[in-house]
Length: 388
Image 1: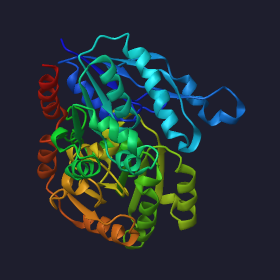
Image 2: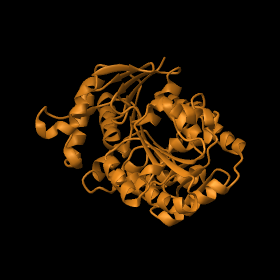
Image 3: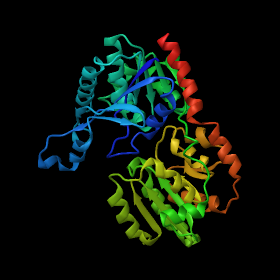
Image 4: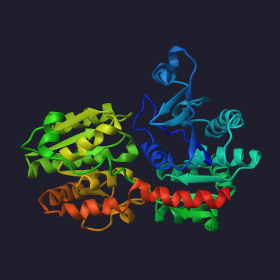
Protein backbone atom coordinates (compact mmCIF):
# COMPACT_ATOMS: atom_id res chain seq x y z
CA UNK A 1 0.00 0.00 0.00
CA UNK A 2 1.37 3.43 -0.98
CA UNK A 3 2.10 5.84 1.89
CA UNK A 4 1.01 9.48 2.18
CA UNK A 5 2.45 12.08 4.52
CA UNK A 6 -0.05 14.86 5.28
CA UNK A 7 0.93 18.28 6.65
CA UNK A 8 -1.95 20.25 8.12
CA UNK A 9 -1.83 22.81 10.91
CA UNK A 10 -5.64 22.83 10.88
CA UNK A 11 -6.29 19.13 11.50
CA UNK A 12 -8.93 18.53 14.22
CA UNK A 13 -7.78 17.97 17.79
CA UNK A 14 -9.44 17.55 21.18
CA UNK A 15 -9.64 21.34 21.68
CA UNK A 16 -10.93 22.12 18.18
CA UNK A 17 -12.89 19.09 16.92
CA UNK A 18 -14.18 20.98 13.86
CA UNK A 19 -10.84 22.57 12.94
CA UNK A 20 -10.14 21.75 9.29
CA UNK A 21 -12.77 19.01 9.36
CA UNK A 22 -12.68 18.94 5.55
CA UNK A 23 -9.06 17.69 5.73
CA UNK A 24 -10.09 14.95 8.15
CA UNK A 25 -13.06 13.93 5.99
CA UNK A 26 -10.95 13.78 2.84
CA UNK A 27 -8.44 11.49 4.54
CA UNK A 28 -11.20 9.23 5.88
CA UNK A 29 -12.31 8.71 2.27
CA UNK A 30 -8.71 7.90 1.28
CA UNK A 31 -7.59 5.68 4.16
CA UNK A 32 -8.77 2.42 2.55
CA UNK A 33 -6.48 3.14 -0.42
CA UNK A 34 -3.34 4.50 1.31
CA UNK A 35 -1.37 4.25 4.52
CA UNK A 36 -1.64 7.78 5.93
CA UNK A 37 0.50 9.61 8.47
CA UNK A 38 -0.67 13.09 9.54
CA UNK A 39 1.61 15.77 10.97
CA UNK A 40 -0.50 18.51 12.55
CA UNK A 41 1.84 21.00 14.28
CA UNK A 42 0.08 22.84 17.10
CA UNK A 43 1.01 26.16 18.76
CA UNK A 44 3.48 26.14 21.63
CA UNK A 45 3.75 28.93 24.17
CA UNK A 46 5.86 29.06 27.34
CA UNK A 47 3.97 28.27 30.54
CA UNK A 48 3.89 31.80 31.91
CA UNK A 49 0.86 33.92 32.91
CA UNK A 50 1.01 36.29 29.94
CA UNK A 51 0.26 33.35 27.63
CA UNK A 52 -2.54 31.89 29.76
CA UNK A 53 -5.19 32.20 27.05
CA UNK A 54 -3.13 29.85 24.85
CA UNK A 55 -2.54 27.32 27.61
CA UNK A 56 -5.23 25.03 26.20
CA UNK A 57 -2.85 24.05 23.39
CA UNK A 58 -0.64 22.37 26.01
CA UNK A 59 -3.47 19.90 26.69
CA UNK A 60 -3.34 18.42 23.18
CA UNK A 61 -1.76 14.98 23.10
CA UNK A 62 1.52 14.51 21.23
CA UNK A 63 0.18 11.55 19.23
CA UNK A 64 -3.28 10.15 18.62
CA UNK A 65 -5.27 7.81 16.43
CA UNK A 66 -8.21 9.80 15.03
CA UNK A 67 -10.82 7.57 13.38
CA UNK A 68 -8.11 5.21 12.21
CA UNK A 69 -5.66 7.94 11.14
CA UNK A 70 -2.25 8.16 12.81
CA UNK A 71 -1.70 11.78 13.84
CA UNK A 72 1.32 13.49 15.38
CA UNK A 73 0.79 16.89 17.03
CA UNK A 74 4.33 18.30 17.31
CA UNK A 75 4.69 21.72 18.94
CA UNK A 76 5.71 24.74 16.87
CA UNK A 77 6.54 28.23 18.00
CA UNK A 78 3.98 30.88 17.04
CA UNK A 79 3.51 34.52 17.90
CA UNK A 80 0.32 36.22 19.11
CA UNK A 81 -1.79 38.25 16.66
CA UNK A 82 -0.01 36.87 13.61
CA UNK A 83 3.28 38.73 14.06
CA UNK A 84 6.43 37.14 12.66
CA UNK A 85 4.73 35.01 9.98
CA UNK A 86 7.98 34.29 8.13
CA UNK A 87 9.71 33.20 11.32
CA UNK A 88 6.73 31.01 12.21
CA UNK A 89 6.86 29.42 8.76
CA UNK A 90 10.51 28.52 9.25
CA UNK A 91 9.81 27.07 12.70
CA UNK A 92 7.02 25.06 11.12
CA UNK A 93 9.44 23.64 8.54
CA UNK A 94 12.09 22.67 11.10
CA UNK A 95 9.42 21.08 13.30
CA UNK A 96 8.04 18.83 10.57
CA UNK A 97 11.37 18.13 8.83
CA UNK A 98 12.79 16.38 11.90
CA UNK A 99 9.78 14.10 11.97
CA UNK A 100 9.52 13.56 8.22
CA UNK A 101 12.92 11.89 8.19
CA UNK A 102 11.55 9.21 10.54
CA UNK A 103 8.71 8.21 8.23
CA UNK A 104 8.67 6.21 5.03
CA UNK A 105 6.32 7.83 2.51
CA UNK A 106 5.78 8.09 -1.23
CA UNK A 107 4.16 11.53 -1.47
CA UNK A 108 3.71 14.58 0.75
CA UNK A 109 0.50 16.63 0.70
CA UNK A 110 0.34 20.05 2.36
CA UNK A 111 -3.12 21.37 3.21
CA UNK A 112 -3.00 25.20 3.00
CA UNK A 113 -0.64 27.41 1.05
CA UNK A 114 1.03 28.76 4.20
CA UNK A 115 2.81 27.46 6.16
CA UNK A 116 1.99 23.85 5.24
CA UNK A 117 2.51 24.20 1.49
CA UNK A 118 5.78 26.08 1.86
CA UNK A 119 7.09 23.47 4.31
CA UNK A 120 5.89 20.59 2.13
CA UNK A 121 7.83 21.89 -0.88
CA UNK A 122 10.97 22.34 1.21
CA UNK A 123 10.68 18.83 2.62
CA UNK A 124 9.92 17.38 -0.81
CA UNK A 125 13.02 18.96 -2.34
CA UNK A 126 15.28 17.79 0.47
CA UNK A 127 13.91 14.24 0.58
CA UNK A 128 13.20 13.92 -3.17
CA UNK A 129 9.48 13.23 -2.83
CA UNK A 130 6.60 14.51 -4.98
CA UNK A 131 4.58 17.33 -3.40
CA UNK A 132 0.90 18.25 -3.65
CA UNK A 133 -0.49 21.44 -2.09
CA UNK A 134 -4.18 22.17 -1.60
CA UNK A 135 -5.25 25.79 -1.43
CA UNK A 136 -8.29 26.02 0.85
CA UNK A 137 -9.60 29.52 0.29
CA UNK A 138 -9.54 32.54 2.59
CA UNK A 139 -6.00 32.02 3.88
CA UNK A 140 -4.69 31.75 0.33
CA UNK A 141 -5.92 35.25 -0.49
CA UNK A 142 -4.54 36.54 2.80
CA UNK A 143 -1.03 35.10 2.56
CA UNK A 144 -0.51 35.69 -1.15
CA UNK A 145 -1.37 39.35 -0.64
CA UNK A 146 0.76 39.74 2.50
CA UNK A 147 4.04 41.43 1.65
CA UNK A 148 6.04 39.23 4.05
CA UNK A 149 4.58 35.79 3.28
CA UNK A 150 3.91 36.27 -0.44
CA UNK A 151 7.44 35.42 -1.73
CA UNK A 152 7.76 32.22 0.31
CA UNK A 153 4.18 31.10 -0.33
CA UNK A 154 4.71 31.59 -4.06
CA UNK A 155 8.00 29.69 -3.87
CA UNK A 156 6.24 26.75 -2.24
CA UNK A 157 3.50 26.70 -4.88
CA UNK A 158 5.96 26.92 -7.77
CA UNK A 159 8.05 24.02 -6.46
CA UNK A 160 5.15 21.64 -5.84
CA UNK A 161 4.39 19.05 -8.51
CA UNK A 162 0.65 19.80 -8.34
CA UNK A 163 -1.48 22.50 -6.72
CA UNK A 164 -5.12 21.73 -6.01
CA UNK A 165 -7.64 24.57 -6.01
CA UNK A 166 -11.03 23.88 -4.45
CA UNK A 167 -12.90 26.32 -6.70
CA UNK A 168 -12.53 27.82 -10.15
CA UNK A 169 -12.31 31.34 -8.66
CA UNK A 170 -9.41 30.20 -6.50
CA UNK A 171 -7.72 28.47 -9.42
CA UNK A 172 -7.85 31.68 -11.44
CA UNK A 173 -6.50 33.67 -8.49
CA UNK A 174 -3.56 31.27 -8.05
CA UNK A 175 -2.75 31.42 -11.75
CA UNK A 176 -2.77 35.21 -11.69
CA UNK A 177 -0.58 35.36 -8.60
CA UNK A 178 1.91 32.59 -9.34
CA UNK A 179 1.83 31.70 -13.04
CA UNK A 180 1.52 27.95 -12.38
CA UNK A 181 -1.23 27.05 -14.83
CA UNK A 182 0.40 23.76 -15.83
CA UNK A 183 0.40 22.56 -12.20
CA UNK A 184 -3.11 23.62 -11.20
CA UNK A 185 -5.84 21.03 -10.71
CA UNK A 186 -9.44 21.68 -9.71
CA UNK A 187 -10.79 19.24 -7.08
CA UNK A 188 -13.63 20.46 -4.92
CA UNK A 189 -14.28 19.46 -1.33
CA UNK A 190 -16.97 16.86 -0.71
CA UNK A 191 -19.52 15.67 1.83
CA UNK A 192 -19.92 12.45 3.81
CA UNK A 193 -23.32 11.12 2.80
CA UNK A 194 -23.27 8.45 5.51
CA UNK A 195 -23.36 11.24 8.11
CA UNK A 196 -25.38 13.93 6.38
CA UNK A 197 -28.81 12.85 5.17
CA UNK A 198 -32.41 13.96 5.82
CA UNK A 199 -33.88 13.17 9.25
CA UNK A 200 -37.27 14.10 10.77
CA UNK A 201 -37.11 17.78 11.75
CA UNK A 202 -39.25 17.59 14.89
CA UNK A 203 -37.34 14.60 16.27
CA UNK A 204 -34.06 16.49 15.84
CA UNK A 205 -35.51 19.60 17.49
CA UNK A 206 -36.73 17.58 20.46
CA UNK A 207 -33.29 16.02 20.92
CA UNK A 208 -31.69 19.47 20.81
CA UNK A 209 -34.40 21.13 22.94
CA UNK A 210 -35.37 23.56 20.20
CA UNK A 211 -38.86 24.98 19.71
CA UNK A 212 -41.12 23.05 17.34
CA UNK A 213 -43.15 26.07 16.24
CA UNK A 214 -40.34 28.38 15.04
CA UNK A 215 -38.71 29.01 11.68
CA UNK A 216 -35.09 28.19 12.48
CA UNK A 217 -32.15 29.68 10.58
CA UNK A 218 -28.85 27.92 11.22
CA UNK A 219 -25.24 29.06 11.00
CA UNK A 220 -22.55 26.44 11.74
CA UNK A 221 -18.90 27.43 11.71
CA UNK A 222 -16.27 29.42 13.52
CA UNK A 223 -17.13 32.82 14.95
CA UNK A 224 -14.42 34.72 13.08
CA UNK A 225 -14.80 38.20 11.53
CA UNK A 226 -14.35 36.80 8.00
CA UNK A 227 -17.46 34.63 8.51
CA UNK A 228 -19.67 37.74 8.59
CA UNK A 229 -21.84 36.60 11.52
CA UNK A 230 -22.20 40.19 12.76
CA UNK A 231 -24.01 40.99 9.49
CA UNK A 232 -26.22 37.95 10.01
CA UNK A 233 -27.25 39.23 13.46
CA UNK A 234 -28.07 42.63 11.97
CA UNK A 235 -30.07 40.98 9.18
CA UNK A 236 -31.90 38.74 11.62
CA UNK A 237 -32.98 41.71 13.75
CA UNK A 238 -34.59 43.15 10.59
CA UNK A 239 -36.15 39.79 9.67
CA UNK A 240 -37.79 39.58 13.11
CA UNK A 241 -39.97 42.57 12.20
CA UNK A 242 -41.31 40.59 9.24
CA UNK A 243 -41.31 37.15 10.83
CA UNK A 244 -41.80 37.18 14.62
CA UNK A 245 -41.75 33.37 14.56
CA UNK A 246 -38.13 33.22 13.33
CA UNK A 247 -35.23 32.02 15.47
CA UNK A 248 -31.49 32.06 14.79
CA UNK A 249 -29.13 29.29 15.94
CA UNK A 250 -25.35 29.78 15.88
CA UNK A 251 -23.33 26.57 16.23
CA UNK A 252 -19.62 27.17 16.80
CA UNK A 253 -17.12 29.04 18.90
CA UNK A 254 -14.40 31.56 18.29
CA UNK A 255 -12.93 34.93 19.27
CA UNK A 256 -16.01 36.88 18.13
CA UNK A 257 -18.40 35.14 20.54
CA UNK A 258 -18.45 37.83 23.25
CA UNK A 259 -18.72 40.66 20.73
CA UNK A 260 -21.61 38.87 19.01
CA UNK A 261 -23.39 38.28 22.32
CA UNK A 262 -23.06 42.00 23.06
CA UNK A 263 -24.36 42.86 19.58
CA UNK A 264 -27.40 40.61 20.02
CA UNK A 265 -28.12 42.38 23.32
CA UNK A 266 -27.86 45.83 21.71
CA UNK A 267 -30.23 44.76 18.93
CA UNK A 268 -32.72 43.39 21.43
CA UNK A 269 -32.73 39.89 19.93
CA UNK A 270 -30.97 37.89 22.68
CA UNK A 271 -34.11 35.88 23.41
CA UNK A 272 -34.38 34.87 19.76
CA UNK A 273 -30.77 33.81 19.16
CA UNK A 274 -29.27 30.57 20.46
CA UNK A 275 -25.48 30.54 20.89
CA UNK A 276 -24.97 26.78 21.14
CA UNK A 277 -21.16 26.85 21.32
CA UNK A 278 -18.76 24.38 19.74
CA UNK A 279 -20.25 20.97 18.94
CA UNK A 280 -18.69 17.66 17.82
CA UNK A 281 -18.83 17.23 14.07
CA UNK A 282 -20.90 14.06 14.47
CA UNK A 283 -23.62 16.19 16.08
CA UNK A 284 -23.83 18.74 13.24
CA UNK A 285 -26.28 16.63 11.16
CA UNK A 286 -28.80 16.95 14.00
CA UNK A 287 -28.54 20.75 13.92
CA UNK A 288 -28.80 20.77 10.13
CA UNK A 289 -31.93 18.66 10.16
CA UNK A 290 -33.49 20.74 12.93
CA UNK A 291 -33.29 23.91 10.82
CA UNK A 292 -35.51 25.31 8.09
CA UNK A 293 -32.60 26.76 6.18
CA UNK A 294 -28.85 27.30 6.43
CA UNK A 295 -27.08 30.67 6.17
CA UNK A 296 -23.42 31.36 5.37
CA UNK A 297 -22.82 35.16 5.41
CA UNK A 298 -19.05 34.99 4.82
CA UNK A 299 -16.91 37.82 3.49
CA UNK A 300 -14.59 35.33 1.77
CA UNK A 301 -14.68 31.57 1.15
CA UNK A 302 -13.08 28.84 -0.90
CA UNK A 303 -15.37 25.85 -1.45
CA UNK A 304 -17.28 25.50 1.84
CA UNK A 305 -17.99 21.87 2.68
CA UNK A 306 -20.70 22.98 5.10
CA UNK A 307 -22.90 24.04 2.18
CA UNK A 308 -23.02 20.50 0.85
CA UNK A 309 -23.60 19.15 4.34
CA UNK A 310 -26.71 21.34 4.49
CA UNK A 311 -27.85 20.29 1.00
CA UNK A 312 -27.35 16.62 1.88
CA UNK A 313 -29.80 17.19 4.75
CA UNK A 314 -32.25 18.76 2.24
CA UNK A 315 -31.79 22.28 3.59
CA UNK A 316 -31.84 25.30 1.25
CA UNK A 317 -29.17 27.95 1.62
CA UNK A 318 -28.78 31.69 1.83
CA UNK A 319 -25.15 32.71 1.35
CA UNK A 320 -22.80 35.49 0.28
CA UNK A 321 -21.78 35.79 -3.35
CA UNK A 322 -18.02 35.49 -2.63
CA UNK A 323 -15.09 33.22 -3.53
CA UNK A 324 -16.16 29.78 -4.68
CA UNK A 325 -19.73 29.99 -3.35
CA UNK A 326 -21.39 31.08 -6.64
CA UNK A 327 -19.62 28.25 -8.41
CA UNK A 328 -20.61 25.75 -5.71
CA UNK A 329 -24.31 26.62 -5.35
CA UNK A 330 -25.07 29.34 -7.88
CA UNK A 331 -28.17 27.54 -9.12
CA UNK A 332 -31.38 29.07 -7.71
CA UNK A 333 -32.75 25.57 -7.13
CA UNK A 334 -30.35 25.25 -4.19
CA UNK A 335 -29.73 28.72 -2.80
CA UNK A 336 -30.31 32.45 -2.75
CA UNK A 337 -27.06 34.44 -2.97
CA UNK A 338 -26.53 38.04 -1.88
CA UNK A 339 -23.66 40.49 -1.84
CA UNK A 340 -21.55 40.28 1.34
CA UNK A 341 -21.83 42.71 4.25
CA UNK A 342 -25.31 43.89 3.23
CA UNK A 343 -27.68 43.22 6.18
CA UNK A 344 -30.82 44.52 4.46
CA UNK A 345 -30.26 42.37 1.37
CA UNK A 346 -29.48 39.40 3.59
CA UNK A 347 -32.68 39.92 5.60
CA UNK A 348 -34.75 40.05 2.42
CA UNK A 349 -33.08 36.89 1.09
CA UNK A 350 -33.78 35.04 4.35
CA UNK A 351 -37.42 36.09 4.12
CA UNK A 352 -37.68 34.89 0.51
CA UNK A 353 -35.98 31.60 1.36
CA UNK A 354 -38.42 30.92 4.20
CA UNK A 355 -41.34 31.74 1.91
CA UNK A 356 -40.15 29.70 -1.07
CA UNK A 357 -41.16 26.08 -1.70
CA UNK A 358 -37.96 24.07 -2.25
CA UNK A 359 -37.68 20.64 -3.83
CA UNK A 360 -35.81 18.40 -1.33
CA UNK A 361 -34.74 15.91 -4.00
CA UNK A 362 -33.02 18.68 -5.99
CA UNK A 363 -30.97 19.54 -2.90
CA UNK A 364 -29.97 15.99 -1.96
CA UNK A 365 -29.26 14.91 -5.55
CA UNK A 366 -26.83 17.79 -6.00
CA UNK A 367 -25.09 16.96 -2.72
CA UNK A 368 -24.71 13.36 -3.86
CA UNK A 369 -22.75 14.52 -6.90
CA UNK A 370 -20.19 16.01 -4.51
CA UNK A 371 -19.54 13.08 -2.17
CA UNK A 372 -16.11 12.52 -0.62
CA UNK A 373 -15.93 9.13 -2.30
CA UNK A 374 -16.11 10.81 -5.71
CA UNK A 375 -13.40 13.28 -4.68
CA UNK A 376 -11.22 10.44 -3.36
CA UNK A 377 -11.28 8.86 -6.82
CA UNK A 378 -9.98 12.12 -8.36
CA UNK A 379 -7.25 12.43 -5.74
CA UNK A 380 -6.15 8.81 -6.21
CA UNK A 381 -5.65 9.35 -9.92
CA UNK A 382 -3.57 12.45 -9.18
CA UNK A 383 -1.46 10.71 -6.52
CA UNK A 384 -0.75 7.67 -8.66
CA UNK A 385 0.39 9.77 -11.60
CA UNK A 386 2.98 11.49 -9.39
CA UNK A 387 4.12 8.44 -7.45
CA UNK A 388 4.59 6.51 -10.69
